[in-house]
Amino acid sequence: MHYPEPISKLIDSFMKLPGIGPKTAARLAFFVLTMKEDTVLDFAKALVDAKRNLSFCSVCGHITDIDPCHICQDQQRDASLICVVQDTKDVIALEKMRDYNGRYHVLHGAISPMDGIGPEDINVPSLLKRLQNTEIEELILATNPTIEGEATAMYISRLVKPSGIKTTRIAHGLPVGGDLEYADEVTLSKALEGRREL
Image (cartoon, rainbow, N blue to C red; front, top):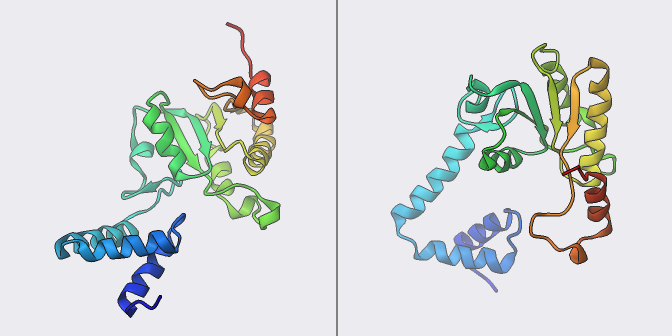
C-alpha cells in the first residue's frame, strides 16, 4: 500500500519503537491524524523534552533530570547498601515496592560474550570505584535471572570478594500465587535452592 510521504515517515518512526510492527505503526499514525493539533504538539514536545532533559546520574547511572539523582541525594537512604540492577526500569520496579531504602547502581546491560559485551562495556568500572567508599557494607546483586544476568552477578561477586564487602544475590523461584505444575525446572530448582526455615 502506498501512503503519502508524511504518513510513511510517521509509520517508519513508530516502527522504530520496540514491539511495534507495521500494522500497529499504521494504526498509531492514523490515530495521530485524528488528534487535535495542540495535543500532537504537546506529544512531540514531551518526546523532545525527555530526550533533551534526561541524562544518567553520575553516581549511580539511574535516569534523571538532576545530577546526582534524587535517590543519591536523599540523606534518609541507607548509604551502606547498594543494589546493583541491569536497567533503570529495574530501579523503578524496586522503588514501587517501597521496602528498599538503600542506594542503587545501574549497569545498563549485562555481560554477554555472545553479543560481544564485556564488563568494560557496562557500568562495572564506576561500581568498583564506588565500592572504595568505606561506608558501603553490602552489595545486593539484583541482575535478571538469565544466563547473562547470572554471569554478570558472578563476575561482580568475584571482583568484590577480596574487599570484604558482604555480597548477596536476590532470591529466585516461584512467584507468589504461582502453581508448581506450571513452573519450569530451572525455576523450581532455584526455589528449592533458596528455601528458608519458617
